[in-house]
Image (tube, rainbow, N blue to C red; front, top):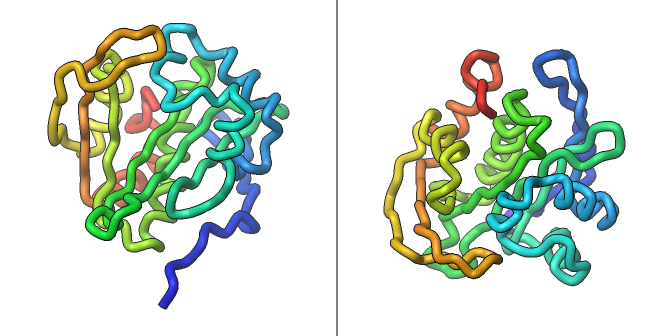
Length: 203
């Protein structure tokens, strides 16, 4: 039996955040590259160095938005025609890592603490369950203390810290922190977070 493919036809999905603000979740492939560039440029310069790739590069953007699973599934949230966050789910591309899914994302500062990150993570975890992903991995560089605290709050545990493992865009070496959690508990805890506003403070 073949694995289910990412169904872009189920999007856009309209969600209401706390405060009655509506956002539209769409595949990155449905977003104009110029809107993504604008989003990246609105991020603080000291945070852009933590992007996995330079999404301002049209070639890299095309690869990210290719919808070629299992390599990557990329989603964006839109408000007033502006990208406010981008999140991805990547599945291991070897037979012994197919059960592992990596989640990554970044939110525009003015949209933080409003539940958008929890919403996007839940969206990716829902799809992860359809493709036999059993464990979710989050990779952060050590200075990202905010996201590290948020994921730890819902049960992700630090599996390893690799000293000087990554090199950011400014040429500095950083420690890589690897967090992990089994999919089902992670999904259930995200459901609880989204049902309780006080729980998603900081997300």
